Length: 118
Image (cartoon, rainbow, N blue to C red; front, side, top):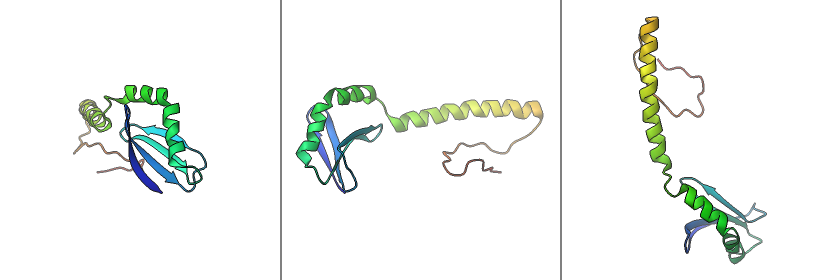
């Protein structure tokens, strides 16, 4: 796997990877990461870069959609807003049912679903 960043006029940097297990040329996009172009060892870099010219309209559409999109900032803002709303609701329920609580926190749990703290 050889990875390089290529600068394309009007688009910016695109990560270009050559994969042994790849059978086709693939152009993908991940918010927060950017564009990724993968191609197999059986094809050359210039033919892989031609895909960018072919799919220029799609690239422009995606760039326009995600240009001002900041993933980390959005996640932080959503988490703060959610914490305020949940903390308010927790206080209401605690008072209504006369059940005190010690602390409240949010975590980004990916593997420990259903785990309890406290």
